[in-house]
Image 1 (cartoon, rainbow, N blue to C red):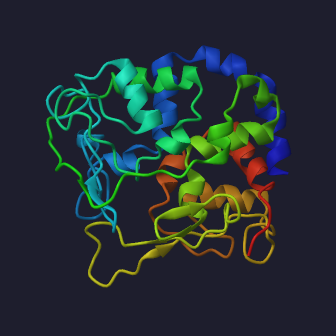
Image 2 (cartoon, helix red, strand yellow):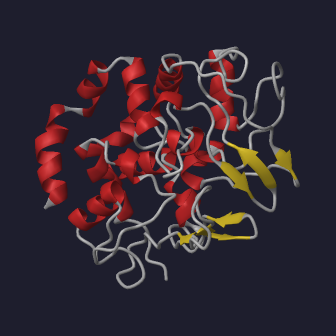
Amino acid sequence: MFRFCVVGCVWLLGFVDAAMAESAAERGDYLVNTIMACGNCHSPRDANGQMIKEKAFSGGLTFNTPGFVATAPNITPDRETGIGSWSDAEVKRALVEGVRPDHGRLAGVALAAIMPANFYKALLPDDLDAIVAYLHTVKPARYEVPGPVYKATVRRDPYPDAEAGFSKTMFKDPVRRGAYLVTIGHCMECHSAWSRGVSDFKTGLGRGGRVFPPREGSPEGTPGTTASNITSDRASGIGAWTDQDIARAITHGVARDGRMLKPPMAYAFYAGLKPADLADIIAYLHTAPPLQ
C-alpha cells in the first residue's frame, strides 16, 4: 500500500521534471545530506554524539582498523585544510576513484577504504556535477585532521551494480532506480557479509553480520553494532516486513518489533528522503535474494 500510494501521488509528477526544477547545487545538497549521508562521517560530533552544525563537513569520525587508522577529512572549501584548492575534476576523482590530487597536503595519498569510492563509481555525470556544485556552497572551515596511517595497501572490493553502471533510461523501472539509490547510499557496504577486510557481494549481498565498534566517544562498555540482514528472507531478513515497516526502519531507526536500531546507520539523513525515492529503495530491497 505504501508503494502504490507514493508512486500514484508522486511519480506522476515526473522524475525528470522534478530534477529539472532543481539547480545543480540543490540536487547536490539533497544527495549529500540524505542518501549519501556524507556528514555522518565527515562532520564532527559533540560529547552527546550530535553533529556540530557550524562545523559541518570540517572533519569527523576516526576509524581504527587492522588495515588503517584514518579520520574523515575536511571537505569544506577551505584552501589550506579542506578541498578549496582542488579542481572540480579532482573532487570528482576523489569521489569515484578514492584518489587525492597530486598537490597540496597529503598529495597523492590514497583515501582510506572507508571512503566508498567503489560505490560512488556509479554516480551519473549530472549527479557528480551536482555534488561538486553543492560542496562549493559549504561554509569553509579551517580544521586540519590527522593524516591517515596505512598498515596495508588500500583496497576496495568492486560492487557489481557500480561496475555495471546505470543510465537515466533505466529509471523508468522503480527497482533499477532504487538499485541506483542503494548503490550511491553504499548500503551494502555495511549490510553484506564481510570477513577479514573483504566484502562478499556475490554470495552475501545484504546478509549482514558485519560488526562495528561503538561510535567514537561512546561511554566505556558500550557494545558494538552488528549490521542486519536486509535480504528478502522472511525469517532472517526483512521479507516479512511491510513497506511501512521498512520505511520506518530506514528513516526513524525503529525495527518492526519496535526496537531502536543503532548507529552507524544514518537515520537522521535518510529521514529527508523524498517519498518516491524511499519507495524505490524499498522496491529494490524486495528483490534482494533471500539469505540466512
